[in-house]
Image (cartoon, rainbow, N blue to C red; front, side, top):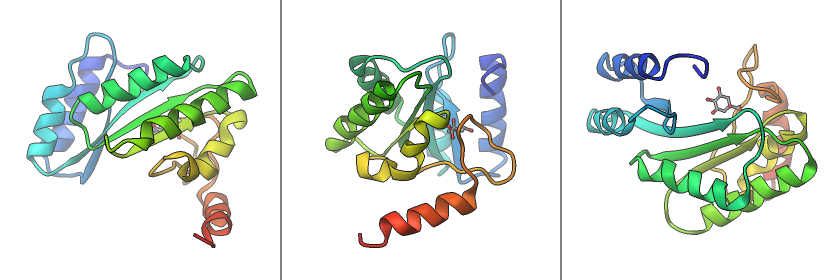
Length: 164
Ligand SMILES: O=C1C[C@@](O)(C(=O)O)C[C@@H](O)[C@@H]1O
């Protein structure tokens, strides 16, 4: 819903929460002009878990900024924080993974950190080693650049996680 009016997006999330049709909702929580905290509290009050997410489809912020974004996502009271960025060069992917490792190091709650595009594909497959609690895969049409088909993700995770 990244191109939509933030309040319309929030109204949609609210209707999903109130119709009891979801176990978990994903809210783009840091959009300008949007106060997601009430919807998040409402969801949690109704037993619906919340992922508070932030997408940067243009680039990869600096390390401190990514850590601040993750802290802000966690500050919304959501169950999981998720940051997805668009790397332009390999160093961006390394920076995202480093920020993910640092942010996951404390006890501030579960995190998902993804670098999009083909450059970031490695983060979708080995994110767990860098603090991510989940990844995203395509079941049919990809919903973000660089998303890999579920069957391939499962095969790679199976190979990577075999000895854990
Ligand atoms: O936040 C995410 C992750 C995602 O952006 C991805 O890169 O796989 C895809 C989005 O649909 C989802 O909301």
